[in-house]
Image (cartoon, rainbow, N blue to C red; front, side):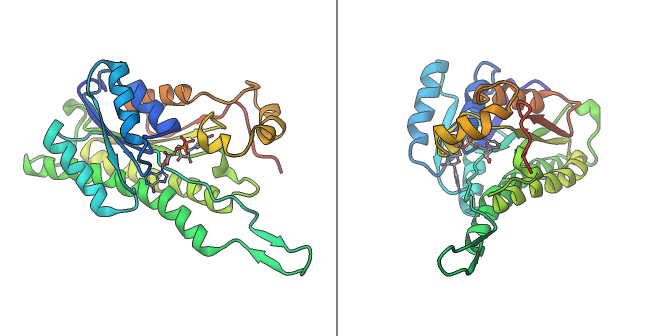
Length: 271
Ligand SMILES: NC(=O)c1ccc[n+]([C@@H]2O[C@H](COP(=O)([O-])OP(=O)(O)OC[C@H]3O[C@@H](n4cnc5c(N)ncnc54)[C@H](O)[C@@H]3O)[C@@H](O)[C@H]2O)c1
């Protein structure tokens, strides 16, 4: 599958991995990329990507990925301006890390992880990415139905591709009860979409990045990263967002990809 002249939607496009994927799409000839982020910085990021690429391919959309009306309007606008969206990388994500159970040293009482936080992380990291992918697949399916097309066959060429962002934490990681649950959940959703969406010619895969040099990881603090992460990686450094983006573009493009790719620099969660 050639990425050139395709139309893409990337959530979390204002930072880290999402931004790196948008950057990597320019030389691959992607026609237009919706850069979706809750942060207002996404507007400037789109401008800088366009300046670097020498063409206006990145279009900023500021909003919350958990808002269904916002999601529909991004797809409506991209569809009207550039044609059907056929690449989706729902990368927006958050962490709300804490131990699942913590005993207060003074009172001796156990404090369990707040359920509101758990639900928030599920909304942003699991439900929203799945629904951004389904939005694209639904529109592709509708377009096919309108053209009288039923089950896809390989002669038609790929109709679309989704890459979900999992994590090494999907295998369990101390202090990440909500985050790890969402990243493991993504695997189940993706495995189902992999089976269903092929009817419409849409492929789906999951990348599991290891610790990558983005604001999400930098928020852990340089000392923590140096002591607790880097010694357990084979590279001895954080993965660069461009390295993850390169892998994501390969997964979007290769017609044979339908599974999961671990891009983890050898890091595994300790006991
Ligand atoms: N950095 C890592 O080491 C690492 C490792 C494994 C997986 N991941 C995953 O990669 C993805 C990108 O992470 P990153 O490291 O680039 O983080 P990041 O914090 O740099 O970027 C995430 C972006 O998502 C945006 N966002 C968060 N909630 C949103 C919402 N509700 N609506 C719209 N935008 C929202 C943020 O504003 C931010 O710009 C996430 O899904 C993360 O879980 C990151």
